[in-house]
Image (cartoon, rainbow, N blue to C red; front, side):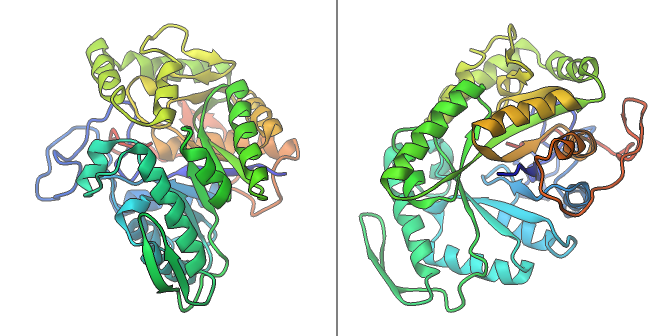
Length: 401
């Protein structure tokens, strides 16, 4: 079982701080309402292409692209980026409740042909009723997962190459199919920590994703999902979503974490915690419980820092340390059964270089990575950042997850 390293594509913007200070008053929905914000990197296609190309050159297998009303559409953005990359795969996040399952199956098939087989799918059921209602979705938490269960059954049925009928509580399909099924079939990634989510993962998905909890808690999740899958006669693989702050020394890495923390004033943290506390997502509540809204004792496990979750939803922890220490933690999670590591950092372009040039060689030396295209040769670090990383560009504070 090899380690699969993936990166993140910040389609809501990017920057050197954890706080969202968007370049657009409405999150970028209307480009004619641009608010001047100093030091921002807008999520335009040119900047996203820089990150995608860097991820590919550095040896990352895929990039996760988020979904929501706060970011660009993942399908459209990534299919454009397939035209400026060659090997990089795109882990496209989408919400099953706002699109027809047969249409999603057709879109995936078309995407595979356009990209020559570089699509992965990340199914996001949704843990925030307020945002779901923006899409016209008014189901409660558990019914959303029941609908996702039906949705994924239909998608796989439509990929079967013959007319497919389905009658459920949420969908009724007659003769659903994709005339040309995708080849290969996209792997389906999925996350969810609630009792309603587990059976959906066990029955339908290829890779179950968890956010970056301490190893003992991650093992409990793996055992839970693995047991459910065995009852379904299936095998599920596992992945984890984490940020990284990896440097040439542990001291440098923790200094970077401290700088990110120093940027957070108490009012900002309090407001973020109040908003995040309203989430229906069990996974989000587990993230919040790791730090309890306090700046104290944020290293909740060796090299696992919960500072990100003070102000950001979704993945709230980062691996912090020297390249060897970060590799140690990845190896520890891998020993539990984690294959896929979906990583990110602020800003995403520079942190891709730190991780790709620092951590990836460590993992390769330990025999944890499959042999693949060689990443860019590293250049000795200078002036506090990799010399090969671009500098001098304006900065954005983004809504990456």
